[in-house]
Length: 211
Image (cartoon, rainbow, N blue to C red; front, top):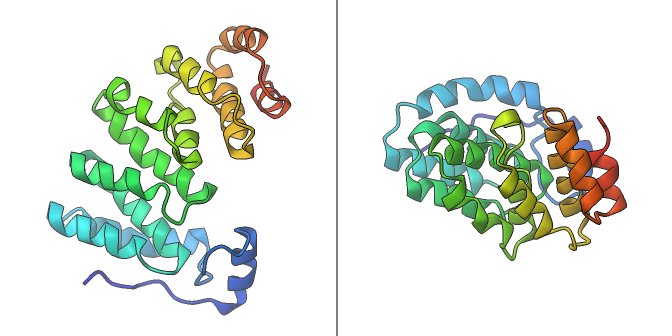
């Protein structure tokens, strides 16, 4: 049985829950302490068999406390180089479970790392862009954050064009975020893209921050 190792800090619970619009229960463990306490659990997770790792990921993500959702994501990222296709699919499936921007953007790091270490953007990326779930599409739009000169602009263009008409705040924010990030590498490309596409004011404002 994986250990439940995080303490409870009642004095922090209400504020942490309120920050996430009271959608989740919190133990009250702030990120620096959680990360410190998770460090030996990460080390232990690297010694698990593949089946045991799957059990640990599922166990932690099923816990009611939000901090343990973060633990599951951190363990997946710590073991991303050895995730099996089935484990990748499980991680992808969790994007819409207990979903909010904090978990979705953290799952993105896991899924993007897996995709690019397998050079699988062409095979695995498009599924996010046409997904019914808004959170899956947000992840697909932001999949290439920090890729810099390795950014696939064909995929980025498709990601935005397939979702630009969606009025959802988190989608428009993601479009702006993806363009803003790439503008640090290719400002002229982003400037041209903005001139050729009718994007929302929010997306344009976010995309133009560094231009």
